[in-house]
Length: 482
Picture 1 (cartoon, one colour):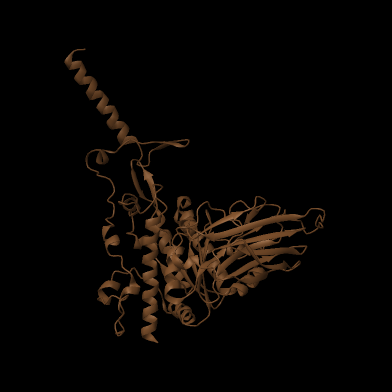
Picture 2 (cartoon, rainbow, N blue to C red; picture 1 turned 135 degrees about the vertical axis):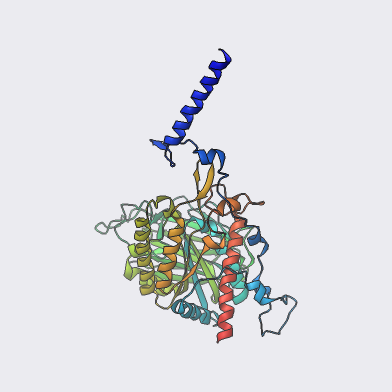
């Protein structure tokens, strides 16, 4: 080919590409599940991609609020570091409160000062799965206000790894959740405070009598994990929450493989509790069940009788709109037995990929408001803090960017929480805001997983410390205003 023809050929190719670039929509052309992209002229020659947030200062500014000497407190000990309180707390990303929310939170702080059991129920999606975030907050609160143990646990643990304990079950357990894919054989809505219950015998329809020829046996065991934090390693008191069994069920409890107690789970009760004190040396608890039916087991706990107990209720895939699906009267009985003083609701992330328009955010906000209203009706004395979703990234061409409607969701949840008298902690803003997740993923060591959604264990600990500092900052304000 002659040089002049080569030149004209190349010019023709460039012109065709230019027309294609000009004609291709900014969002690309979708063909089935595939999206065809061509860069625009500005992207080709000018665009350097999204600007990612520098989060190094967030890591550098972390501190332990319990080691700071408060103004007016002159009682110094070797464990307390005298520091400039004002300059340090200025770095705290505070919980947003209106007057009603502050009054409710101060009621929780007042109960913290009493020599009684104070329960915090931390509900959330997979961001808290495996006791992440909760374990750190629990350990710090128990060190400050007393209490031991890990709080409420499902009889059948659905997750492979849990930071605070190792749990084993016999092979005949089944778990029935209220969210996600609901088992059609369950003919009631009495799922309990963990939005799921477990059984070791098949559920029986109300119209059928139990087959008394089948005798069932099952077991579960829990022991402290090697990586469990200090306060989570101490087991003092065992509680089992159950209901809906047609036959008596025998229970044997063992501590460190030594038999310590036997009791019977009562039939035809809606919601009941079994309690047994544990020896001081207990590091492992196992429970053996036997009978002609299984109760619905709503959870069990190994903890202390006073101080702080904090439940980790991680519901993978949930958007947090299950409270109104649970039977109201049954929920009242359950929460009356548990007596929660503070709810922490950490949801919203699972809705983000499906929020394609502003109207869907408004709709989710209405659903979430209904959940708060249900909790307030069920537990009117309890305070509520909503933790909004973190930054989450989706891939646009070669870059990871914040989901388009995520900031709108954050603002909606904030408005809903405050209008309902709840506190709101903005995790999205605390971690750096828009386009901060890639910086957490690329940190060294990493603070978030390469799915650009979930924190790493280190990142979960960091964000939990930020929330804990914000909570104790409000507690310090409460003390100063007494």
